[in-house]
Image (cartoon, rainbow, N blue to C red):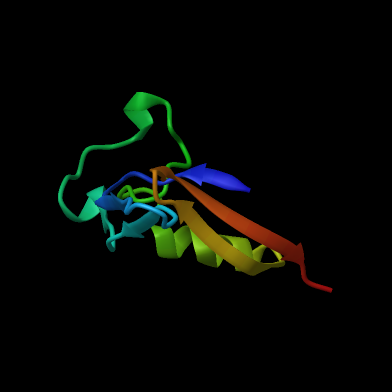
Length: 90
């Protein structure tokens, strides 16, 4: 599953001769901590990182619905997308 995650982020990519590209993603700051603007006005009803849907709230919702979060990650080059690998708990 992927969901938009609005935040302030910083990604750095390093490329040295004869070595693979190394990408570092610094910790992100959810916009809700800085700005109280609603995401509803932009049509993003499940955008994580807003005052309506915090990251913690969304993770708790997944767990309450019976999912186990196997893995979660964000693409350092496009950190707006937050990915969750889920498994149904039995």
